[in-house]
Length: 251
Picture 1 (tube, one colour):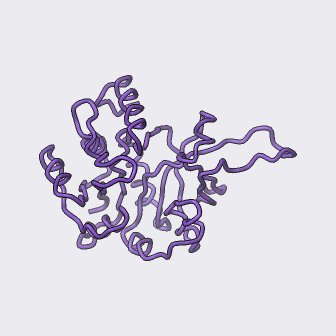
Picture 2: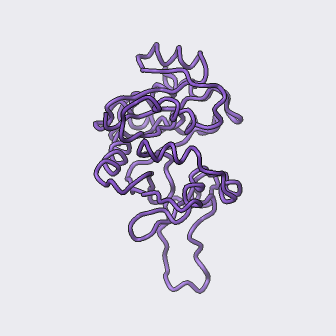
Picture 3: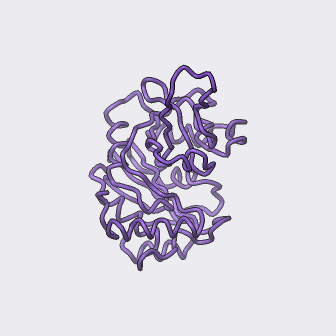
């Protein structure tokens, strides 16, 4: 296989217990993510990696290919490595189970980049920030990139800082969208990287990659998502889906 998508689905959550099973217009959130990911043209397979029998049962009932993984895993990356370890696959896409607005073209752009450029190990997405509230929100991660669109830094703070004596009038800011693609080899390298001080400071796992000197390609997308961390986020998602039609992934 060339590309598989894995959706790590965790039952426990500190801020919103069992959020992946939260009802959105008659379907669990996890099903919305799975249905949208299934529309990808690049995925040869799509697997939900569960840590709980309840999630496994729900996923199987709505038709997904789902597997149980160890309850000992501390992050989604570990869950994914368990799933893909025995598989002959080139590229893995890590699809967040709490992103019910994920667009299939986001998945395809990551997969295509990693298949076409053999020098890439890891890729993710960014979108131009249009709302100043997002820029100032620490839950919205910002990213700055070099001229070749490799990440220079990810932060919860507004970056880059616009100095009072800056020689430009306007800055374009980008939010990071937490969809990741990796080559299989690099996924196992990533899994074993030490936690960096930057990661401990910002609480952003991808910073360990930059801290160890590896590169992350960042692809710009026109599509946006809402990560569901709280019941309030869930209401935002419901409103957006009501606007565009529940199963419409074209907008």
